[in-house]
Amino acid sequence: MRYRKFAALLGCVALMGGVAACGDDDDSGGGGSSGDTETGSTEGAKAVDPASMENASGDVTVCMGKDTAGDIKLAIEEFNKQNNGVTVKLVEFSTSADEQRAQFVQRQEAKSGECDIFSSDVIWTAEFASQKWLMDMTPYVDSRKDEIIPATLDTVTYDGKIWGMPQQTDAGFLYYRTDQVKGDLPQTWQDVYASAADLDGIVYQGAPYEGLTCNFLEIAYAAGGEVLNEDGTEAVIDSPENLAALEFMANGVKDGTAAKGVTTYMEEESRRYFESGKATWMRNWPYAYALGEDAPAVKGKFDVMPFPAWETPDGGKAGILGGHNQVISVYSDNPGGALKYIDYVTGPEHQVQQMLEFSQSSTLKATYSDPAITKKYAFAPQLLDAISQARARPVSPVYPQISQAIYENVNAALAGQTSPEDALKKAQSDMQAALETF
Figure 1 (cartoon, rainbow, N blue to C red):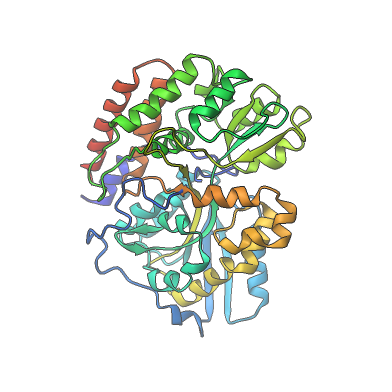
Figure 2: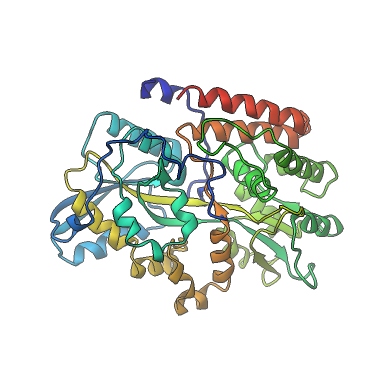
């Protein structure tokens, strides 16, 4: 079907601008996706030659949402100081993820070469690659695979090809009160909730938006659930594994283990609730760590851990990756120059700088053992573990509708408006209808 018709069908995905793109997760899987499976939908796509960056020159434009952290402005400034023949400028869009995506779509539909590089949210890969709007970067990324945290590559892989270079990532933590949680840390989600029930409860992001999709999938994937089948053509969310996860979460709300208002909470509401001293446990992104150290009620009284396992014989650990990838527009007049800049901004030196000075999590394994990083961020090893056990959200051209089907129906179950069984049946129906539009 034509893209304009498809775009009109997309649901709205609300992302937490400036905090984390829920992103802003691992066992290195796609959660049932067409990432590694070759479907032929991108056959004939242009590929960038890694050698093209060696003698590249000219101008390159990077387009992205508002650079609220400032790390990209600094990277461009320092890159341009090298006088290597390529000059980079920045074009900033809105802080709204929906508006950023709309700006990208508008330019690509017009076959505009204005933006050589886009900073692409991890959930946009399949949609943009399926339209043949991105250059295939497989040869370049393959040459650097040993440096990259494997899980982050899932967010940029579709139809058996790699469509960009991971530049910034994120994965959630469990925060806990060290003055309340004594002895060995819980090893399973069931143990975490038992601890929460005995103490001051748990808070997370339960409002009907993208954050709830992440929160649900972190537990559902650990329980062995999936969202799509292997090639991404069919919904499989209505499964016993996903039902067990949703019933577990719904029971936690019903019996008071979860915060009373959790079905209306996003990142900031959850953070403030925890920082007020009302909860023993909190699921949130790494950004909340530094802020918590300035909160009198919890300062010096909390720590973080990666997500635990699900308590079944087949139970595993999982998280959900957020972040952004650097992608090259197929309409770029200077792909070699674009690749030269991407090689710099995703290189070891800048990756340390973006994490050290701007709290932007690196996609490179070595960053987390850099002495400057481990000195500043005591949780660096836990963050690497969290990212490494994380998974990409379902890789699909209709991901916005898939996510909407998850967060609307999961929220209804958590709020007691429907049963977990009926919520998953409705999510299954909504997803399958979306899949059949593409």
